[in-house]
Image (cartoon, rainbow over all chains, first blue to last red; front, side, top):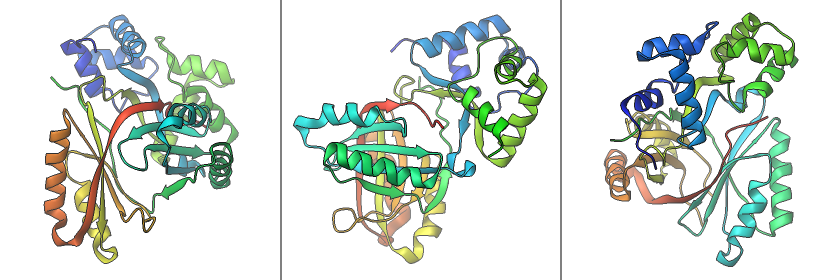
Length: 152
Length: 155
C-alpha cells in the first residue's frame, strides 16, 4: 500500500459525494481542495491506477430503478474454493464477493435489473456449483453510508 | 425506466471520464448535450436512483483492513427500533434487517463495522452488544479475509 499525501487523503475524504454537476466539475472540485484542475485529474487517475479507489462516478441504488439487490452466501468446501470463486465472479450479476470466516464462507451481492433476475442467477449458481445458495434479501434498511476517510 | 436515463447510467457506471468537461463527453457518447446530462443526473440523485457521485475507495487500501459483518439475533418486536439505533452509531456503515435461515442462521440484524484491526472491530461490536442488551439472543462477527470481486453495481 503506497503512502497517501495530505492532498490525496482529502480527495478520498471529501470527494465521496457531492461531486459538482457543473460544466467543469474537476476545476470546481479542485478549487475547493486548493489545488489545480490538472493536478486533481492526475491524482484521480493515479489513485484509480493504484487501486486506492475502485471507481469514480455515480453510485447506483438498483432497487430504485426497479431492479433487485440481494446478499447471498455459500458454504464452499475448501478444496473447491478458488474454482467456485472464479465461477461466481464471472457472473455479471455479482457486484461484489467476499471471503468471510464462517461455515458460510463466500458472501456476494447479486444485483439485477429486474427482481426475476435474482431467482435466475441463484438457479444458475446452484446448477453450476451444486451448492445451495442462502439468500438474505434486505427486509429493512436502517442505514447505508459508506464514507471512510483514509487512516493515518 | 426512461431509455435516455438508462443509456446515461450505462455510460457512467464504470466511472466518469477524467477530462475537464466530463458531462459533455458522456453526452456526446449517447447523443445528448452536456447540459442535459447534468440535468438528468441531478434528477436521478433526487430520485435516489443515483445514491451519490464521487470516489469509491478500496477500504483496505486506505487503512481499514478489518471488515466485520456483525450479525445479531434480535427479537422481532424490537428489531426495528433497535436497528435504527444501531444504524445511527458512527462506526456502522451499513445496517439492515434480513430474514433468518433457521436452524443454521438465527441472525436477523446485520451491521457492517470497519476498523484498523480485528480487535477494533470487536470493541465496536461490544458497543452494539451493549445497546442491544438482553434483546440480543445470539451474535457473531464474520470477518472478511479476501475481496474476491468488487465491481460495483452494474445494469
